[in-house]
Length: 119
Image 1 (cartoon, rainbow, N blue to C red):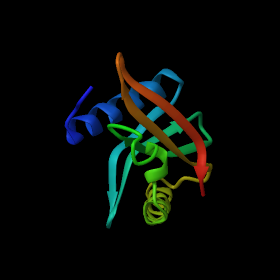
Image 2 (image 1 turned 90 degrees about the vertical axis):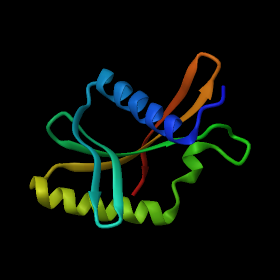
Image 3 (image 1 turned 90 degrees about the horizontal axis):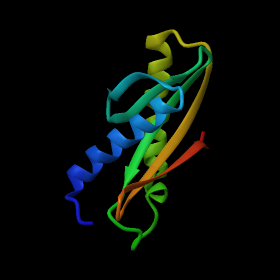
Image 4 (image 1 turned 135 degrees about the horizontal axis):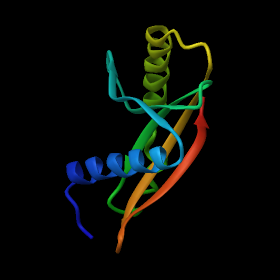
């Protein structure tokens, strides 16, 4: 299944959002930007948990699994964006960083949700 990178990224983000909504999460922001940081999805689970979600889709695992491509620099940027979001939203609840990894399979996309993936 060959999908151009930009289409795979968009399809992956859509699949991740559907997965999260189906599991009781509420969308707060999509593609939130702060300085050089971009957060794919900002979700709320209940009233006390804000979840920063990085979506990684790869066309194959030839060079590694999608979740392995969340670099330390990307984590730093996500933390920076999360701090700004907490201020903007006056958020006093808990915060969690998740990674959703996707890869094409014969019948669509395989999705793995890594909760509390890093801090």
